[in-house]
Length: 209
Image (cartoon, rainbow, N blue to C red; front, side):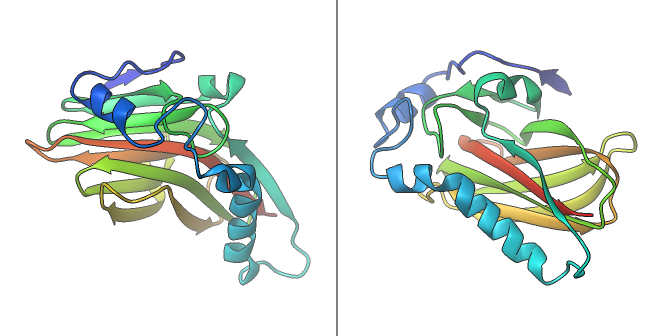
């Protein structure tokens, strides 16, 4: 398994790089026509996580936002990229959901490519994490994973299958009474002979104490 931490914009190899650069709206700073979505991204993310938790929180509980991370500025140093097989990943500004930076992972073979970061939580009763993903090229499986890093076991897992033409899609997962030290990760599952890529942006975690 290879693990790297990349802080500079990703240099995509041809033909992926050429395809992404030519794709409609794939310009630095985000996609034209998505300005309303970008402006309200943080509010939408918070609203969705609050709604997901509303049915499980007790009257005495308090909601706390533990993470809002869009790969911007020093936040980019929080993320690491791992792959098994012919994959890559890094920070880019080609297809942001919000702001001017995003994460990108790709695969050209069986295996997986992932982007993740450690998060240290206060003691909580329930948490919901959400992130935006934007697949390109072929239909692909994307896992949104909450992992206990010492034993490397799943705390929560959400799997989605999205077409390559899908817009940015919000993916979320929830858990109760989990550990205070977690690895939050998005993994792209590779397929032999198929070229895949996914942009990732705007992680949010909201917990109840």
